[in-house]
Length: 45
Image (tube, rainbow, N blue to C red):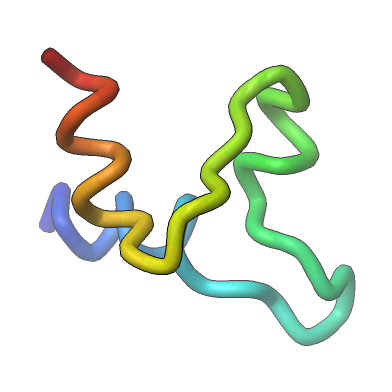
């Protein structure tokens, strides 16, 4: 379930706001690469 939550909050852009939810909640976090999963894993270390 945690993987689905991470996918929903950090990977998918939502139709209504045209952004990922993390962009609204944590504005200083920037995920610029094409592979956001890998970038999140690297940041978690």
